[in-house]
Image 1 (cartoon, rainbow, N blue to C red):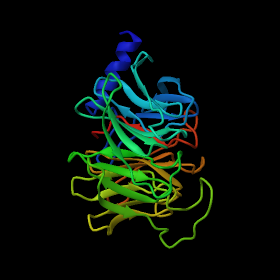
Image 2: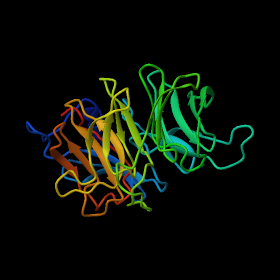
Image 3: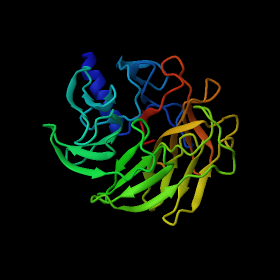
Image 4: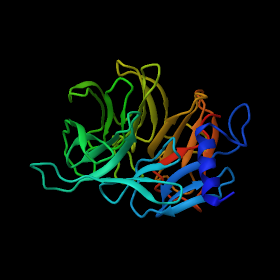
Length: 312
C-alpha cells in the first residue's frame, strides 16, 4: 500500500474509533494528533511519529475532518486545510475589519456540518463563518471587556442550537452567544481561593476551552486556572479536578478538552514541564487511565492535541 493511502486509511480508522490497545478501564495508549515544537504530527500508540510536517506557528486549535484532512491555523491569522499528502487544499486569511487597523490572530477554527468554516478573530473581536470561496456569510460581534489582539478569545465552538460557546481569555469568562450577538449565558472564572501568580506556570482566570455537554452542563478547561470544572446552567460547579488532585500530577495551563464516547474526559496540561503529562484522560470518578508523556515529539506547549482513537 502506498504511504499516502496507508495514512488516509489510518485516519479513517481513527474516525471510526479503531484502536489496537484497550482494556475495560481505559486504553494502554492512544494515537494523538498534535502541534508543537515546529511540527504538526500524529504519534501512534507506541509514541512513534507516523506522520508529520513542519508547522512553525503556535497552534491552539486542530480538527480532523471526515475526509482525513486536518483543519488548523498557521501564521497569525491564516486558517488552512491540509491533506494527508501535506498539501494545503484550502486557506483563508483574516484581515482587519473596517474601522480597525491593528493585528489579527486566530485561536479557534471549526468546520461546520454545512461546510462553512467558523473562525474566531481576535483584534476584530468577532466570529465569522466563511464558505469555500472565502466569502463571509455570517458574522457575530463579541462583547470584550479587556480588548487584546492576542487574548480576546481562545477556543470557540458552535453549538447544535446555532449558538457559540466562546472562551474570552483575558476577560476570564465563558459566554454563550446567540447568532444575533446577544449573550444568553455566562460563567466567570474565579481564583478558587488561591492567590494570583504570574507566568505560564502561574495561577489566574485566563480561560482556554469549553464544551457543552449533552446534560446541558458546560465543561471548562480553565487555562491558568489550573483545573477542569463542570458547571450547570445556574453556574454552580458540579464536578472538578483541582490543580493537585490527581496523584503525582500538577496541573498548570489546562488547554485542549474533549469528552470521549465512553464518558472519559481528556484534557491538555500545557506549560507543566517534563515531570507532568501533556495530555490526561480521566474517568468520571477521577481515575487517570491514560496520559501522554512524549517530549521527544512534542514539548511544553502542546496546547492543541486531539485523541484520534476516541471511540474506546
